[in-house]
Length: 416
Ligand code: NIG
Ligand code: FE
Image (cartoon, rainbow, N blue to C red; front, side):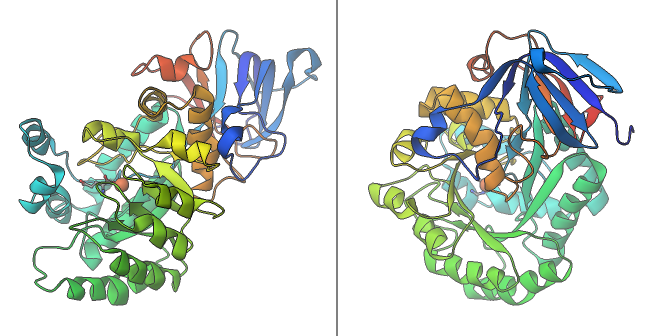
């Protein structure tokens, strides 16, 4: 552990996402622009970005560690603004059902899906959950993520929702990741409730106050979807969370046009996420709001669904963010570089748009845009160095490859 270590990275082929002044997000036509400084240096000090510039203007720097990045690119670490990475077990048996033709809803109705994950999580101790989540945390760090949002929603009882959120908090203490947490008690209605209103009442009157009392959640979420939570129920739960200081971030329009986008706008959500089903009205509803449309192409890929209409949203002047949705049911993958590939290949986003979406815009989606998501003086020293690649576009192009050679988080080199 090198405290206050000073690092100089020099001869960088391309320093990606350099912003003298960080925007809160980039939207519309601006998303096509990715500022890159060629033949650059980057100076990290006291866990922060101290300075950067062109090699020929590099001042004398007395660094503890000097890294030569010739032929390599340096990116700000990815921000993964939507995950469910605390879970007990994988669900590849459902994967096989899906291959054989069952739908996500049919599997859920059979007691698979979220309720299956909840059953397993309820039987797993907090320490075991942490151990399993730690492996995933290390995995995503290796693929360039430096900050991550983690949801509850596989507990579905007060004590198990709290257990999940405690694990998410402990991940932040035990890894170099910056973690934001979201309470997703409204993920599914447990089988024991013959009257769904009893469960919603429990969420509002017991779970939210208990989560807030321990300061366990920054945000409140609900799965607004046919067969899960209606727009009216979602709105009610969002308002209940807001009373305890949790800002809404909503699972909206994954399987149908669910009304979730409009509820997000109405309740002042920070983001509406998924958006596989979007009509013109949904796109219009998001214009001139502070809501970040967040796309999770890993889920559309895994469930073999239509992808969100990213081009239409960008052409309507909206920003978009990218995240993995890392979870055992619909997106068992926490690798942001693969999301960039899906964004480009399946949603026709350019590499510049994809990189903006997975850095500065996803940082906004968890209120970290002032400290993460770009190479800006004073921001947290979270960067990764690629292997020797011809251009930054090679990152989404070479899908599935791990092109990350070294990671620095909080100004410290991660050695794995
Ligand atoms: O974001 N859509 C709801 N929640 C998760 C999947 C949950 C599960 O199947 O375990 C998602 O896709
Ligand atoms: Fe999700």
